[in-house]
Every structure is written in C-alpha cells, then in structure tokens.
Length: 325
Image (tube, rainbow, N blue to C red; front, side):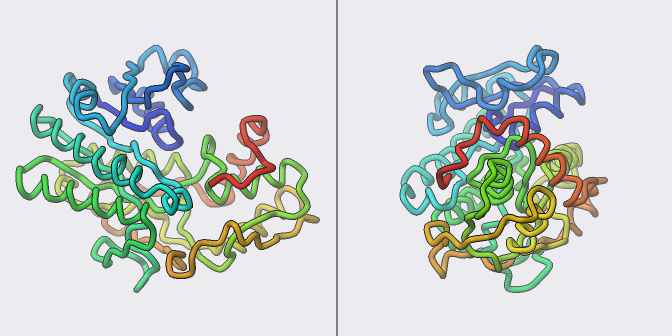
C-alpha cells in the first residue's frame, strides 16, 4: 500500500511519516510549498528514512495539487491544518480555507480516485469544555474558538462524504499530543524551553484547565492501528490516555525536573477569552481499544523526559524570549 501523509512536514506528521516507513509502507509526503525548498521536520529525519519517502510540495488549499498528490496512492492520512488557537482569533478566514476547504479537497480527490482509506485528523478541541467525563465520541460539539469551529466543520464534511458517497472515511480525534518536534505555541514545549533557557519566571496563561496528554509515539501508533482495522471505517475515534492533569500541575512537574527554583507567572497576553477557554478535557479511549489493538505505551513522566532531552539538544531552534502564538 502506498499512503499519502498531508502535513508530513509538521510535528505529528513527521513522526507518522517516519513510523510508516519503518513499518514498510510506501510513503508520499505532502509538504507545504515554499521557495526555500524547506520540508519542515522531514529535513531532520535520517537519510535511511528519507530515501524511502517521496516528497510532494503543494498547498492543501489548491484542489489541483491535492488531486495530483493523491493520484497514485491507496490511502491518505490527512493531517495538514492550521492548529494554533490564538492565531485563529486573528485570522479565521485562513483557518476556514485551510481546515475546511483543504479537507474538502482531500475528500473530493479521494472520491474521484476511489481511494481505499481516508483518515481525517480531528482534535479534542471540537468537544469544548467537558459536559461529562470521560469524553466519548457521542459528546456534543462546541466551537469555542475559530480553530475548533473549523475542525468541527471539516469533521462533518468528512462524515457527509461517508454517508452520501460511501467514501471509506475515518475521523481520528487525538487529545493533546506532545513530544519531540512540537512547536513552542503548545504548552509543554513553551514551559520546557523557558526553563532550559534559564528563565526564573515561567510565563503561562490559565493554570486551572486540565488536559489529556498523548505522547506523540502513542498518537502515531493510534493512527496506524485505526488505519489497519477495517472495523474503523465510518467511525470517529478518540486517541486518549483517559488521564488528566492541570496546566499548573504540569508546570510544577516540569519545574521540579529542570529548575526547582523557577516560579510560574501569569501572563495576561496568553489568556484565552473567558468563554473560549476549554476548561476540562479528559478523553475516553474505550472505542479505540475495542476496535483496534492500540494501548498507550508511554507514561507522562517518560514522555516528558524524552521531550526535555530533545528540546535541550534543539533549543537553538526555539525563540524563548517571545510568546509563540
């Protein structure tokens, strides 16, 4: 099977590309075109991995390029998206174009070409603040940011192509993923990079929200397990640990690991609007464990340790003196 990975130049996409190659898949990597010929995190992968990756440069918003990219593939893992919540407050049009229109382009091309499997990446943010826990796939949706609203829209368009045209779609819904290669717009790398840079005051937004954190290798194995099971076609499936930790608890844990003398400071610039903040996310993993053989393999402590090691070796790639939106 030859598979296309969109967003392969990004955080989760690069890990997924790498793992698919290791498992013997033929992989085409869709990366965002730029004149620097920069392939994002794929540029850091070992040569023995990249020698087995076909790179396609394009723009997910362009239906012609998407159709060309998918022309000789059997399946697609669609991860390309704009994901930063604060930036979605400033540029909602771009999120609609990328997240909704981009997903539609994938679905249209897959329908034309009779693609055998289509995995569309969702997010736990579509649920908004938990109305009950653990959050299963029947939980109501709530667009608490332009980002989450566009992901809800993309999910529902994907569902419609399954129901209307029989397209073999699966909606994959990871809860908060972290690990090596994640940008500092996310909470774990922003805490770690500030600590590694020697900051004594660690700037954060709200400390009370809770999150269900997946180590990136567990998220990637979840994608592949879902892909390799025929039981998952037409389903939307959480990838979650079914454990939660508050941002404050997480920050204290990292402070103890790196610099116990550091203190947390609330930075108002990093606070979300009150009604936009998702206060609690705790996912149910019952469905994925019923339909596949997936189980999380990494504890939070092990994942954080691996992430610290990576960021320590790559601190020069991060701008620790600014707020990464």
